[in-house]
Amino acid sequence: GRNKNWIPIMSDLMKTKKVFFAVGAAHLAGQTGVINLLKKEGYKLTPVSNTK
Image (cartoon, rainbow, N blue to C red; front, side):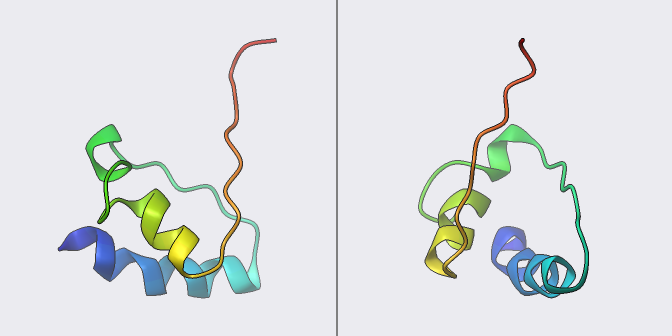
C-alpha cells in the first residue's frame, strides 16, 4: 500500500536533509505501518513529546 511506497521516498529525503514527516495515526501502527517499515530499513525512531 501507500506506506510501503513512501519508505524509499522518505529514505532518500532523510539522506540529504533534515526533514519532518506528518502522517495520520492510521499510517503508524502495525506490520505495514511507517514505524515498522522504517525500522526494517535500519532507522532508529525516537518518540517526541509535546509536553514539558
